[in-house]
Length: 403
Image (cartoon, rainbow, N blue to C red; front, side, top):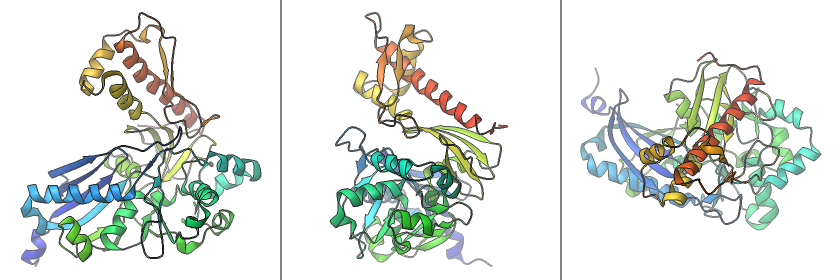
């Protein structure tokens, strides 16, 4: 018979560390929402193609969100059975041997500054062999190349790197003190052997890394630790709540939308636009990325770095955020398809898998007759056209989704 205490613990705290905001939500066991809090923030772009955020900002946002939702729903504090986090991928957090940040700066998934390291790799190595071994083509998004850039430009601080974590894994570390990641995050380090699902000794040697610098690999549902007393003080959570490894935002989105069986597919737009096809094994192609999902399958995906971000940019640049998203769509709908000859290339932050990763956005065909509605429609159509191009690349792998 269950004790009264265990009967009471029927809520779940979820955390999402996004590129544009951090969110915390209390859910019932059936998935229905009790309460929600959010903190928005921006990316820092010191140069064209560079994008970074402060891990301390993520942690402060998590603490603020948790405290807000517990303040609004105080009765649930003692009812939380477990905590699970997801988050933006590839943002490379560097810790020293004392568990402190080497620098309060993480190079984000859309940061392109390590492209010279990628180019050198392509010239020097057999990219096809590494594609088969590590399940992905080389790209500036992968932490292995970000670390190579860091070591070249900051050799003194690079020597202090003891642990390498992704954004949600950093939050888990701050909650529990545990150094762990799940297979979805690990599959995109460009350091994981896709057959053995373990860190590749060959890749570690190639990039000058040590196994002990990388987190332990866990299933997304595996408990990695409990909320510490220090984290309890900062968040308002009771100490001792179990924390699971969690998963990447992309894997969480696919699982939550029911896209986790081979043959299913998804089009997901947040900051970026991801088109994914689920497969029993990686889809090996020089323009297709692969992610191990929260379950025992793979997602072959293409990515448009600035999908939703292009729309966010347009709303800010063309309307100073004075119109809502529905109003933006209405203005675009009043313009004929094709925006009367106006085209938009949506490569505001370059493009990860392209012949020219330093591509730039632009309007083409601009005429005096074009107004704000034309520009907004051109942005929406530009995202759609770029996504259709990416879908064609997935079809070249012979992977045509059934649903």
